[in-house]
Amino acid sequence: MSEMIDLLLTRRSVVAGSMTQEGPTESDLQSILAAGHRVPDHGKLGPWRFILFQNEARKAFGEVLRDAYFAAEPDDGEERASLETLRFLRAPTVVAVISRVTAGIKIPEWEQQLAAGAVCQNMLVAASALGYASQWLTEWYAYNETVDAALKLGEGERVAGYIYLGGKAEQPGERVRPDLEERISRWTAP
Image (cartoon, rainbow, N blue to C red; front, side, top):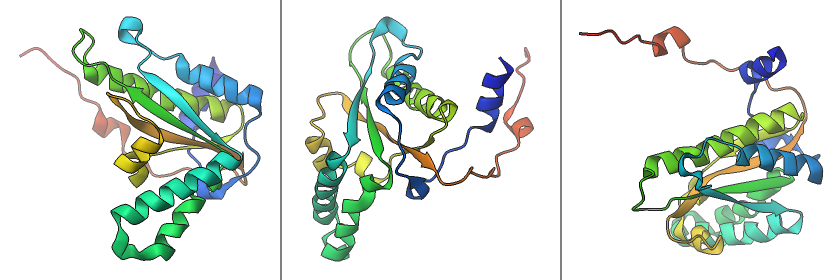
C-alpha cells in the first residue's frame, strides 16, 4: 500500500511537448483505459467514452485542428494555424475523454461530469504507475464546435480532456503547490 500512496504523492504531469515517442504498448494502453473506466459512477451510467489518436490519425486530426483554428482566428493567419497540425504529434498516443451527460434523470449532471474528470485522473495515475509520461489538457480545441463536430460528439457530450501519453525524456521536477493547511478547515456546530 505504501507504494500506491508514494505514487499518489509524487505523480507529476509531463508537458506534452517534452514527451518522447515511446508511448504505451497496446497492453499498457488497455490497462490505462481500464483504470480510467473504473471510477465512482453514481447510477452505473458510465457517463464517458474514449476516442484514441495514434499513428497517422494524430497527423490527420492536426489538419482538422488547423482548419478549426483558422476558422475561429482568421486574423492570426494561415502560418499560425498551420502550427496546429503538430499539436497531436507531441505524444504517440492522445486519448480524448468524452463526458456523456444524460439530462433529466435522478443522477445530477454535475456528478456525471465529475465522473468523467475522475476517469482522466485515474488514467494519469495509471500511466504514471506504468512508467509513462502523461498530461491532461483541454486547450482551445476542447471548446470548439468545429472540433466537436469532427469528433462526432452527440447530445450531452463534451470533451473532458485530452490525455497525452508518451515516454519521459527525464523525470519531471516538483512544482510549487498551494499550502495544504491553508486548504483545510474543520466544520464545527454553531
